[in-house]
Length: 466
Image (cartoon, rainbow, N blue to C red):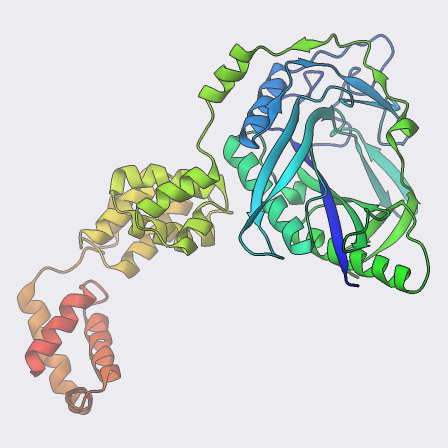
């Protein structure tokens, strides 16, 4: 009987607050080691945590976006364990009364086709730990990240393979970004996933699960799920048992190895956090947060589709809130959906990681090109320069004399000259060879230093020959 994979994810996302969850230290990424911490986030005796109100708002916003029920009465709990990157030897989290429960995310069903819902068991708030750096036989600890606010999004075991696990995480990333609650930079650790995997024969009860922690790419999530399922199946088929344990996944080798036996909730000796009182979240507060919710990715997809954009364009624009925001702001000026989308999925995506693109600058270049003031090539040149220097596009065009030539007699004389100089190409064109026409257009554009409309040149050549 065939085996099936059963997978659930615990996704951690760092929130886009300026300060940490229980103190006023900055959450900025980087900085000198141990320069973003204080007595509170390092757990010095006599200090008291105070909940960052923005964390509560972002947690409610996340719950709404993920179709969850928001808990009206919540508490924090202490999760006790000793590890060098946890300065207090406990983590303030939520076990008994998490802020959100019973949500779902819709993904493609890779087994049966159509759509399926991955249920969300809960979302809870907690503080991040620090980071260990292992080098030259030494282990150093950096507490800058300790106390950075996290949401942990815990799914039910509704995922059937690595493809679905990766898609689920991608969908979460999109929603979290468009909610404005996290930058989801996986390379910086602000979105990472713990993967729980078990296998069973169809119709049997759930098998023994293992966990792989802190996976920070979609590829790693997909490979980790599939490779761990294969490992477990091989164990069962050889008569061995799967041991419940935490494993570390190595992206380079595409395999995992055992770290320790898997802990259960009672191993952490949870108890109510004594320094933070219970919090009552009113329905009025939830309604207020809901009223300010930004547009989510699925809503934007419908809107972009109504503008006539292709699925390919929509997918690229919705891959990052930066692109979607730039598209909408630029579109307000250009009123040209397809042309604006083409510029963003082309020139902008090629350069924006290095330079910030201003909507008014991009719109000005698009309109210069579409209104036949400059050629497409001149528009690309203008964009590449202005994005670096900040010069106004119209100033750059004037300074470099990039305006399209409007002198009809000059264009006609140039076309006549090129035709007379290239009788072979003319003959090939009359025989139906389109490459010959492209050659003639290129020669004219070169003679006019690219300052003419290629369409106009093409039409003039055809007219002159025929």
